[in-house]
Image (tube, rainbow over all chains, first blue to last red; front, side, top):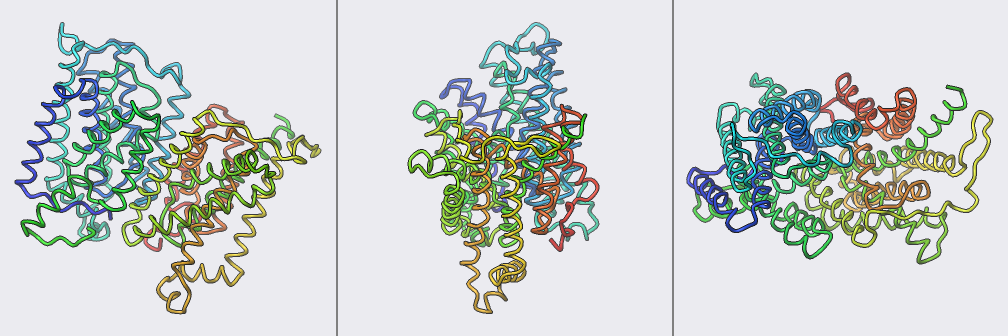
Amino acid sequence: MIARAAALDRRIALALALGALALGLLLPHVLYVGLATDIVIWALFAAAFDLLLGYTGLLSFGHAMFFGGASYVAGLLILRAHWSFFPAVAAAVLAATAIAALVGAIAIRRQGIYFAMITLAFGQMLYFLANQFGDWTGGQDGLQNVQRPTLIAGIRLDNDTLLYYIALAAAVLGVASVLRVVNSPFGRVLSAIRENEPRATSLGYRTSAYKLVAFVLSGALAGLAGALFVIAHRFTSLDTLDWHTSGEVVIMTVLGGIGTVFGPLFGAPFYLIINDRLSTLTTSPGLVLGIIFIIVVSVFRRGMIGELVYALRRRRHVEHVAPGA
Amino acid sequence: MGAGYLALQIFNGLVSGAYFALLSLGLAIIFGMMRIVNFAHGAMYMLGAFGAYLAAKYLGLPFWWALVLAPVAVGLLGALFERTLIRRLMPLDPLYNLLLTFGLALVIEDFMKLFFGTQGTPYAMPAGLSGVIDLGITVYPIYRLAVIAISTLVCLAVWFAIEKTPLGAKIRAATENPQLTEAFGIDVSRLTTFVFAFGVGLAGLAGVLAAPTTNVTPVMGSDIIITTFAVVVIGGMGSIKGSIFTGFIVGIIAALGAVLYPPIANTLIFLLMAAVLIVRPTGLFGAPEGQR
């Protein structure tokens, strides 16, 4: 099993939550607001992804299908039917939920590396489908000029800073629900499945049902991030469905720390800010980020937050954690 | 739809099957020995194609030389990765090596993009294999027939080597029980490096074979690896024979499906994968879960 960093104790968790929130409130004042919004959206996406990888032990390489799929649904509803913010986002999340239920029901029949390959393949299938139905999706052009929807009667979301805080609120809500799930009895069963699925089965849990629900929840929250993406950028394209997008969210989560809830909230800004800065210097920022990723997987497997928590706990001798966990 | 057209499509299916078979055979050999899935397999395929291209451009080496040398070079690079990176993660969950090789795939692809962009360059058809041949029912390019023949021969040779030679016996023993094999005085560590190098070498070979028929580009690997993963899921990574057979069969089914209903061309293999997962989750040749 992919080992999760040592369970966070309450004080560290509180400090990390406050740190992430402070970062969120500060972000638009230190970065340009477009990048800040991207960071919040991807942080939500990565937190949703980590619900599956960190807490259920399932590595999905196809999460772009929820992110990208939802971005197209929200984009189309706003572009063609002039839906307002909440209905469009809700419909997009529902669509992502439906895709996740369908794909999940098939994908969870295998686990481990097979699950990764299967989700990757399904993600690619949706990419091809979106490319094929160009009348709807715009094919290679994507959906251009998606005007900002109205928030509530009369208020359009034209103000980028307002949109940032709405995205932040959505992300806080999303991360809070991940936390709630992880710390619920349901989340404990997920952890049991991650640690030892046969044992969880022998205790009488229908593990496949639990895994499916986790997959669907993760997909729905990834869909929320995708819906925010198309609204923030005023466009969406096949890139959001590309397997590189699935890969990016994997990288952010691993950099931040698998199974730490808060790790992805720091992994996403780390990734995006480096990417942003490098883009002005080189045409291949992915090369640098890929090398960082390889180093992290090879040496610092707990990720930024995981290693931090591990170091703190070791210093305080709170609990002995076996090295290499 | 005439018989000639159908035959043409079956040959096209055999050509894509030839690539699938080489790629999934390499993945299966590596998986058998190491229990890991090499995400960088597509990148190795791409490097094989670039190997052929660069050897022709700077060393003036013809296709037949590249067919031997490029896979060896790719294999050596694979051995380097196995020794320095992959080996370190072997005691951990195989997902870590999937993540690591995913990172390698990204880095290799981006590295090649630095020099070659994404446009790609053509690779000349090898002398003597250009042109078409009349097979009676249909006319078909000679080179593509050569691809089918070379891939089939190599796959059979690998199967024979693993099943019938002393080296193959050692590999099968190490696959079955590494500790016991080591106890018999066989250097399993070196054998593992060899097997990994050989597996990615097969991907390199597929890349060389693909070079004259497609544009040689840094992204050619990521396009094919996902489809190959679907092929692997369909076949199950249980057996050598299974991965070869599945590669060719899936190639033919995909080609014929595209004839019957063209819009399905890109997605048929994935739909096939879904169907297999529903009916027989372990794949056509896979052992039941638990027995791996």
